Length: 208
Ligand SMILES: [Zn+2]
Ligand SMILES: [Zn+2]
Figure 1 (tube, rainbow, N blue to C red):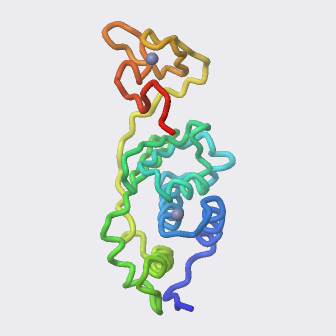
Figure 2: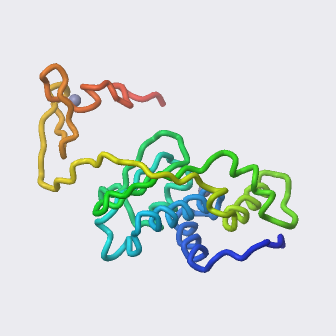
């Protein structure tokens, strides 16, 4: 068994267990996401994210990799609750916003973090992919936050939180667009796929 240099705190271990259970495994990304969420909530002064303060904050996540599950589990934020905004930007970064105070902080995990893993674990890990991952998991648990993350204050233009029902018909495809997600292009009300060409599919039968 590899020897850990420092003990991790109980709150982190508890959250890691929950995040790993939801995600399916304990991986470096789960540790990063869990610590990112704990740091984010702390910085914006949210202490009861799943109870009395569940409507008081918003999380923006810029990756679709492993950390996203941990951030969702720890904060309780969900896309369906409208307090989790997913941005497919391929960055290990998340922004936490306190909707009452307006305080917002963005946390990123720089590439340099990986190179520091060796400094924080002791003992034998294999040189293969699994060994490397196991080492990173243990290292990220104990690495000081200032080595793991860059945390900075930001300002966020928040979306409209109106809950009243609103829908329009796209003048391009005729489909219904809910919740003010339409765009106005050349005087026409359109869905984003028609108006901005942001389509991810083409009409037709798929092969096979
Ligand atoms: Zn994973
Ligand atoms: Zn359309």
